Image (cartoon, rainbow, N blue to C red; front, side):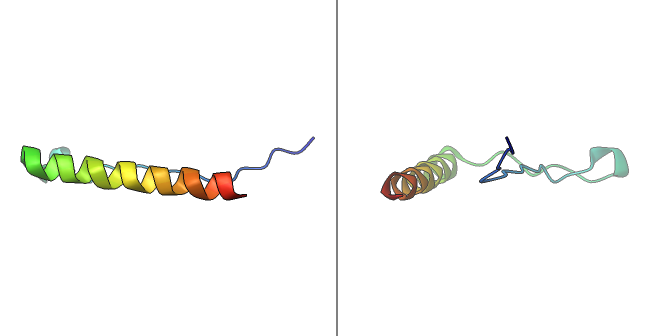
Amino acid sequence: MPIIVDEVVISVEVGNAAAGGSASPPAPMADRQSLVAECVERVLDILAHRAER
């Protein structure tokens, strides 16, 4: 039986402290909350799309 992969999610953290690069400063709490809200909205959209199938 073949295995079918629907979606592949790749996460990347950009920054190279060993080569002299610096990581970005942590985001303020309001920015984090808006980012989390956007992520939740996208996940709910994906789930709703899958439920329509």
